[in-house]
Image (cartoon, rainbow, N blue to C red; front, side, top):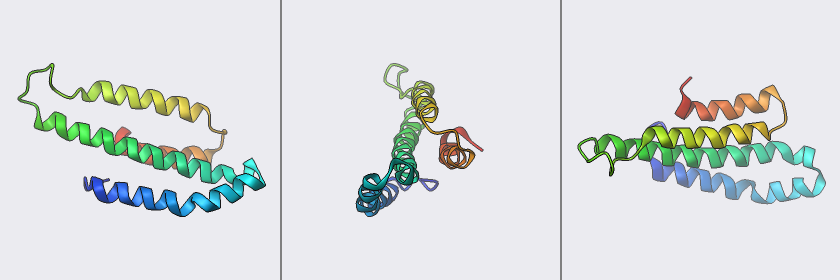
Length: 113
């Protein structure tokens, strides 16, 4: 994601999701508590996909700076939308400093350090 290699990043996200699929299913059968870290990982993978889409929009906005404003990608609106979604998701997470820290580390790709 840092190097704007969207296809590679998406492939890695898909591979990770496939690798954790059977383990996640088994953990859910055992207990929610045991499956929770895998659920957070799945959420993080989804947010990485959202970050890729946001970064692509940023590139389109930069490349389309000469376009009419109506046709230009709205980076500010996209950022507001993704932040709103992320706030709602974080509110649904258990209050745990480690979990929040991991989630916020991924989000720093959009929010900055």
